[in-house]
Length: 316
Image (cartoon, rainbow, N blue to C red; front, side, top):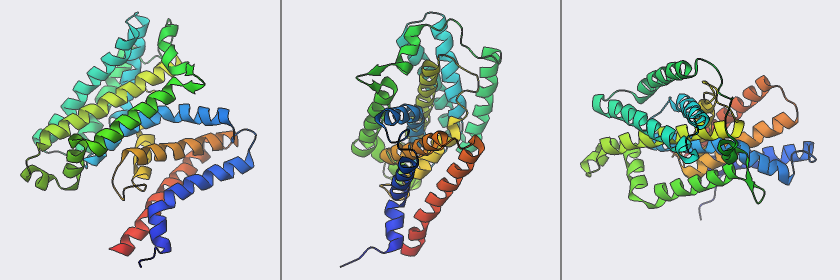
C-alpha cells in the first residue's frame, strides 16, 4: 500500500492547511472581532469583487496565457457604469454596457495575440496603458461621485436575508464557471489548449476562436467587477480597479496549489481569494500597517507556491 509522505501532503493540502491556520490564529487573537458571524459576512462581501475578476484571470491562465489589462478594465467598467448611472440610464444597462464594451476590447486582445502570435502579457500590458489613458481622459482625472442614484448603489450595498447581494453574485458566478469548466466542452477545450496547444489543433479544436473568446470573457468579468465596485462605493475613480490586478493573479496562483495540481481551477481560485481576504481582514483588525500587510501577503503567496513545488520535484 502506498503511503503519503510529508512532502506529498504539503503539496496536496499545504495551502488549505495554511488558510485554516491563519483563521485559527486570528480567531484566538481577536475572538471578539474576527470570529463572529457579522465579520464572516463582511469577509464574503470584501472578497466578492476579487473572486469575480480572478475567475476571469483563471480562464485566461487555463489556456496558458495572461491578461495584464484586468485592473485597467475594471477601472473602465467602474467609470462607465457610474457615468451611465448619473445620466439616469436603466440600472441593468449600467452593468451590461460596460461588459459589452469590455468584451469587444478583450476580443481585440485575443485577436491580436492569436493573429500575430505575440506574447499575451505584452499586448495586454499595452492595452492596460491605453485603457488607463482613456479612463483618465473620460473622467478628467476626477472621481465620479455626484448625483449617483440610490438605485445604482442598491446592488453593492444591500443585503438579502442578511447576505450581501455582492456575496450572492460571487457564489452564482463561481458555480456557473465551475460548471462550465468542469462539465461543458468549452471548459474541457480550454484545459486542452492550455495543456498542449499543438495537440489541440491537431485534434480539431479551433484554438484561435477559443482563445479570443476567453480573453473577451475575462475582460467582461473585469468590467463587471468594476461596475460592482462603483455600486458598492457609490463612486468611481479612474484608477479604482488597478489594485485588483495583482490580487486577482495572487488568488489564481494560490488556487493552483489546491484541488488540481498546478492547474488553474475555479474553486481553487475561490479558496485563494478567501485566504487573501481572511488575511487582509485579520491584519486590519489587528491594526497592522498596510505596508506590513503587503509584505506578509507576498511572503505567504511565495511560500504557498514553493511548498507546492517541493512535492512536485520529489515526484518527478
